View 1 (tube, protein in one colour):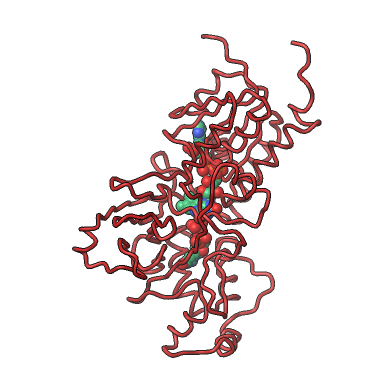
View 2: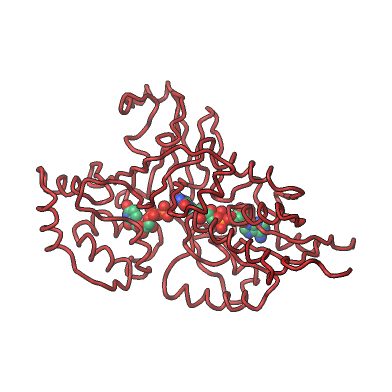
Length: 397
Ligand code: FAD
Ligand code: UDP
């Protein structure tokens, strides 16, 4: 067998976590190699054009948002931004509802106009105040009350996670705001925008700004790692796989994405009307959630935010299912029992000082993109700091 190639850093995974590390460390003069088992860059944030040239998010919608100036400044080196209004509706009981819960949702519920004060009073009677909700059911009962819980949250959560909201951390459903005003923005962060030319272009520019970086696609780290002799390793894949499932399989949720493209003619034949004077849309909002009656959880029409100038469009339906050999792990499941199991892997990881475990899969944490970018930037800084493995000049060979 040929001798393993000596390099500085071997990186498993070319998602946000792996590529931020690769970019920072290559830029600092280290020889880095990325191994990615898929055939493209970007992990789950990858986007691509469909047959009509309409961009879509291949692994579900990726709404970039952040409160971090450092993350925004760093990524802005590789992309311009198109400001985005992340607007979502919920569809149940035969109608579209204003969502997340706000004054307009309440008006739909009672069937007449109302004031903010009336809604607040009603909500006070409905809600079950709870300063320390223990699970996702308690969070929604505390913030929105049982009527909205039953309408919008219980069924969706059961479908998405195959678990009762009672068996999920409060943080899961707490992601969704509840407001007594008419503000129907889905997210809360101060900066909300998407890369103007898409995520994939952003990743390509990161690679172009990584001197000497080698990227091997279609390559599984767990089998190909033996060809390399790195001073340090960065692993961003599922942590249970790294340790050969020695503490059992961690449960991850997966999704089946059903993509449908529509030409202008197909839209017209289907009787889809222009939305706000803009032609070529299939549904009335960027995202429509289906909490109750369908097998899918949501339909996303990303063109609402990419604002591509085209009469065609596409939609993606998401069908939740467990991750397995043929379905990628997308979501760690935030819950007390899974945390206990993950803790065993975390301890195993802590005993490997020459490997950094980062990202959504390797730390079994339900992170958004900006969070994994922030963590990767910090980890790169640590590795390059005077006390890190690359901080001191290399000793004599
Ligand atoms: P990943 O993107 O999962 O990348 C890990 C990479 O490692 C993958 O490419 C994988 O193929 C590779 N890999 C794994 N094992 C191996 C191996 N053994 N060998 C080689 N390669 C391997 N975040 C937001 O901020 N906003 C959103 O709106 C949003 N929406 C989302 C919607 C969905 C459906 C999903 C699933 C996630 C969403 N996210 C969103 C989260 C976002 O995708 C993650 O925060 C981000 O992609 C995590 O980056 P990562 O590099 O840690 O992981
Ligand atoms: N959720 C829900 N109903 C909705 C939207 C969200 O019950 O209409 C719950 C559900 O448990 C979901 C979680 O809130 O998994 C987080 O929703 P988000 O839209 O942030 O999920 P993601 O985009 O990460 O899949």
